[in-house]
Image (cartoon, rainbow, N blue to C red; front, side, top):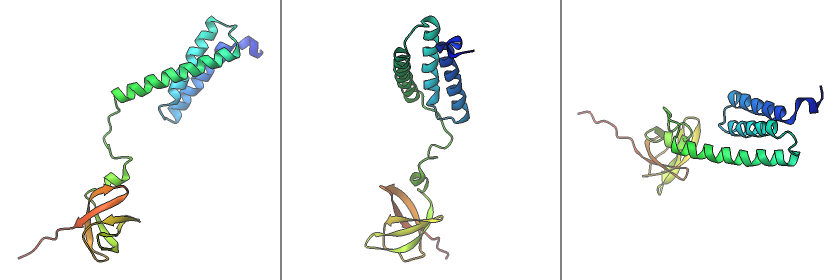
Length: 153
């Protein structure tokens, strides 16, 4: 069996299948669009088997662009709902967290310890070891305020 016996259309359809399986294995919501473009090109090759290689590649490129644009529009109009909207926004997840001053906050600037890392912070002057609450994140800097301690009386 030679390449000519299989046919370019079949090869494009196999390529589409491989891309589709790759999307399932490593989901990135991108390879599926290339798989669709390859499938369309493969179907075109079954109808027009004498289409030159340049035309096949042009078809694949054009259909790739079209499917990616359609996909982008689809995901913009119908965003995927998530149970954790801050999953990939580490800084926003810190709002409300209690942190410890690592480098004294003097003249409104210092550093605070967050889990196993240290972040730049801005807020009222505070000594090393003082507990602060993150109120906002601005350009990678944590805005902090003192933690209210309950008074007993």
